[in-house]
Length: 220
Image (cartoon, rainbow, N blue to C red):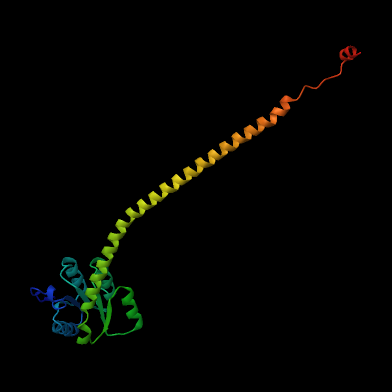
């Protein structure tokens, strides 16, 4: 069974007055006390004693709630499972309630994504500031969107810079390669000239004279 109080006009402009809270608890007395405290904080409250119904309401009206407060021990769906599903599907801040302050339970709630963990009986002083979780989540989402937008733009500049850098490196390599080839050509030309100079003296040498019988007769 759900009880909903219609949101007044201008509620968004007077935030946190009019913040829309979905309270989930299978204990009717605890749920009624929680509802009264939330209304004293000027929040708009929707209540249900079934986690399955709460999940259905959130899926059908995901934009009509700002925050969820759920008891840990629920008969139909475990409170931690509800917390996990809400975080994955609706990305709403969820506060866990429990009569047990066991460190393991608190740690489990935090690791599952709970933004706060309150012990029963809840005090109104604790509920007056729960709106900060909504503001923090909206600011966090806004930063994520800006970051994602910047990352989408960054590759274009980085790609251009990398391409330009690769082009410059390629040009430098071609330039160095051309210079190296030119130097090798000059060395080959100089080596060729030296070989020609070395060959000239040998070419200018006279042929070796062999003393033959005919030359001996002529000499005599």
